[in-house]
Length: 417
Figure 1: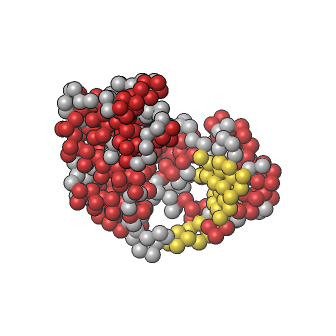
Figure 2: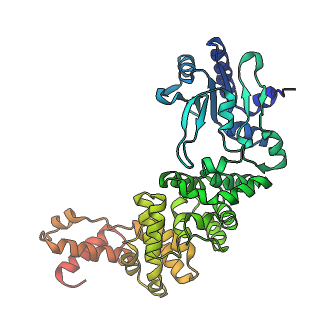
Figure 3: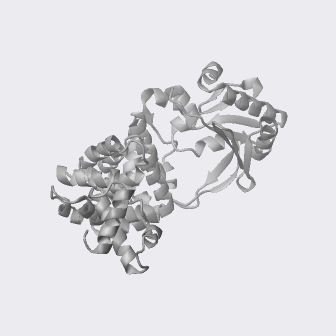
């Protein structure tokens, strides 16, 4: 017997979204097509976790349905006719529509060949049973749950289960997603899924650098506690498959947690990455950068982090002048400095790094080069030298106001600083 979840769906989704998905069902029905709510939003509805990333699958032509919806709802429409997909964006949410498709994998790790299909074809291509549920949106069947792979039962049992034995062979990025879902939701791998995952860990070698980077981003940016994913990856032999030097010995648990305590209002992904490779040498780091094809900013931060680590002992002096701290740390990226602040066990070094990040890095004199020229300083190297001296004085608290800065410059000019 088909289960109908209309009351639950109408309670879970905000009224504007419910109205739109009902319109989608009506328009698709008028066009002799089918439309279904699929994926994470169905899963999270049963888990009572907020999720307003709305994905619809259309048996027919998703772009045509999207145009019909856009004409009525004033959503900003973006279409990708080549892929049979579209996006409707509204002020507080967006809806993705995709034509139902079936996939054929020519070889392990390759992107699949895609052809139009039915809902059943679309669901079998998904990663896990809990992500392979759908809800019918057509008026005559609105709210009917399509659960071909017992995803709802797996939610109750708190299991992550693949849909067929070759799932990890076809696409080994599912190994990394399995660990993310397992740790995020507090679930466990279904027994046979874990056996197959352990068997297929070497298949990660078939995945391109760009796709691996995408999965790494998800771990570092979207998971509330990425260290739990890395700990599980270590346990299952996944980390060493990504790179032999990657490991988790409990240190990451402590340092990632400290990162979240210290930095509440910035993106933490690059700091996490710096800590992940903190014990690497330059050669190992270069291999990881290539393995994941890391972007320049992240790669540079990671290099800076391990280079600063090697010289960090030079900051372990309680009475260092702020200007000395500034000149020492200025060549390094802020994210690398943040990572070293998390990693250091020295209170003195920690205070110096914190002082740089919170005060010194942004401290600037009021006077600039033009001001010095107006004060009669001759153009040339002397201007730069005076600005450096003035900046040091500002950092060390010798000058605080613009007037004091002007007096300092005059004293330098007269040779009596």
